[in-house]
Length: 186
Image 1: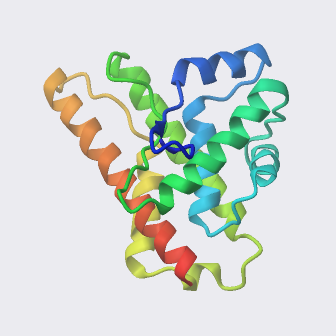
Image 2: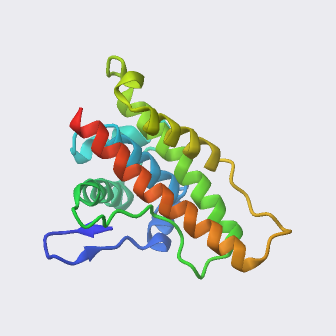
C-alpha cells in the first residue's frame, strides 16, 4: 500500500483483514472493501476516514465495528496517500500469488465491483459527474465493469492465466490512478 509516515510502505495483510471480517460475521472480502474505498477516493471524495465507514454501510451494507472499523479507516487513509504518491505505490488489495488462481480471480472481480460501487457513491451528489470524466476514463469504468465478471478459463494454461491476471491487475492499478488524478483535478 503506502506510507504511514515512516517512509516504509504500509502493507495490509489480506488474511488478517479477512479474519476481522469473518469475526464480525460479515459477507464481504478484503478486496471488495478496498475496491469500495478506492472507488470513493477515485471519485474525488475527501480523505476523512469516517467517510470510509459510511461508504461501507451505504455501498456494501457492511456495518464495520471494532478492529475491522479501525482497519477500514486506516486502509482508507493509506489508500488515499497511495493514490497521491508520486512513486505510484497504489495497488489493489488482492490475495498473494500463492493463493489459488480461482480465488484470486474472484477477489479481483469483487474488487472491481466494490470500486464501481464506491465510485458511484462518491459521484452521486456531484452535478454532471458523468460529463466530468474524459472519454478515456468512461471507457476504463466500462472495462472495470467487464472485469467484475472475470473467471478462470479451464482451457487456458496456468502460465497464461497468471499472465492475464497480472496484466489486468496492473491495468487496474494505473487506470485507477488516472481516474483519481482526473477527478481530483476537476
